[in-house]
Image (spheres, helix red, strand yellow):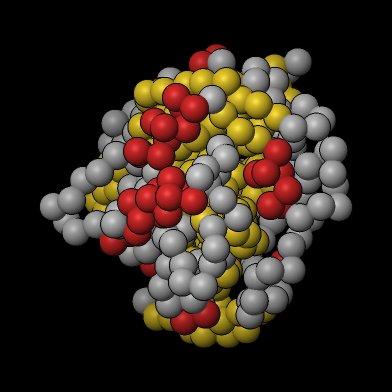
Length: 336
């Protein structure tokens, strides 16, 4: 039996603009019709898309499996919501934290009779992806997340290799926080300035040109193991000891590193999805980042690899490889 860890609970007030309504694009009979409709009342195949609410910035995607909804955020602001169809019984869509591994606009399945999978954003090498497909109004896929064709085209245009995707039992709106110093360590002034300067020199993956291919990095910190890992394109390249101040329970959190921002004294992060810090449920999220540090060797390796768009996962689950499906993603579920 599997115990699913819902990566998000409740709603956060950070998100501006979208509310419960949006411009709805309905596609049928070869034309599109714009209407306004409550998100909770979207019918299969319907979606909202309001890219002008946040015209630029990094994208994050949250798929709420119980709601059969896909929420798209850019720069922490929700710009779109779509109906979807996830895995049917026996082929359930896994929950967890993923990054897009591959994009293929005209992909066909190598497993299911060469079936077309337009606008495919691959999440695992075992066959889980976001792509256009039939939406009957309930989970019906073999594990993928099916999307309306027009929505999948728009989504394909804003994602990139490394875009974080959370498949979860619920969703929460992202929130912004600024860590007052270098994450996972106490830094002297000149060391901190050097780290921020290096980060400024690196592009976010969304800004890569067609010829640029850089590694995408993910950090996983586990209170259960008191260990921390650095993954490069899904493969562990460094690990170290995790030190926790106060209670050893941290909750479940996913952070997305932003480019350095003028006027901020520190590193800017977006919290994409979370369970509250069990030890301090009423404290702001910055307090949790301040509670964790790592050994100096690991922090040194991390500093050299940090880039805008890097994902950091904080969890109370073990990070043993058995908790992952191969090397391609981190799955935040556990057997009981």
